[in-house]
Length: 264
Image 1 (cartoon, rainbow, N blue to C red):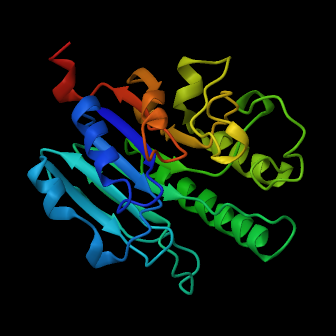
Image 2: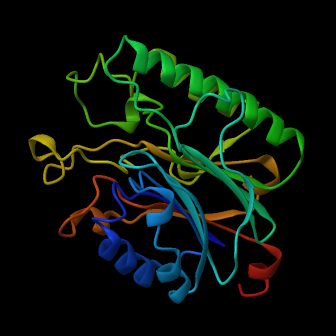
């Protein structure tokens, strides 16, 4: 099963880019972030024509998350992150696909730091850590995939001091991500590529894509029940180089399932 995460950065503006990537990569599960479309504007019928069932949580102009599944309909289990009923931002959705529980998340950016946006980021992160712990306790095979808006370590960003005050690399952000890993989650991309650049995001600013000045913001965390089945990983960098591209590239992993084991 190939599971991908892709911050599409406005599905309405980049639908053609998304369709082209789906045709080329043929992922089995896709976690999308930053739909920037209200609930009724999500192109579910189009994805159905392409062979993908979908669940999604839209929000007008901002945020928005979705899970696509090739050849089946995801079984929705949750459409928001627990812990704060007053939080209406569309940043988390969860569904079962092919015997795997998929959590798709778009963690707050948190800039400027300090300030209320950074406080919201840390509070949201704490809710995620709490929910992730409850998920682990179920013993199910789980993936938590998405744009975490965290650069976990200095090796996950191009050499620079210009972002030292940024919420993406703040000590508090990195500490929260480390607490997730300490629960028992595996950082799948780094498991199979422990060192070297593994960028998933290149800012539109200051020619950072042509200069390959990127960072790793998009992560796929695996529960122990799934980590042992990890067989491959990658970042589809070519997508970032297309016309009208998102500033993110899709990141993906492959895991063995009972169905896929017989095909290898």
